[in-house]
Length: 82
Image (cartoon, rainbow, N blue to C red; front, side, top):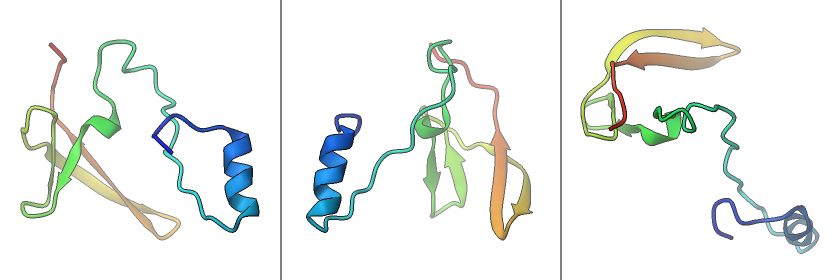
């Protein structure tokens, strides 16, 4: 199935046939509609251990917290869509 093109009926059919489905996390922010980037627009660069903006710029690491055994990293950079 393509990202964003699926229905509950298709997912149920896969389940009944023993097929494990993987679905994209829904976009819950309105930021894209506002002309802003969203989390999915950024990529993690394993070689340099930084997140990269859509323009390829490295984001600055701000802090890492742990919640329920999971680490969460916050990085930022002032970026505006053109």
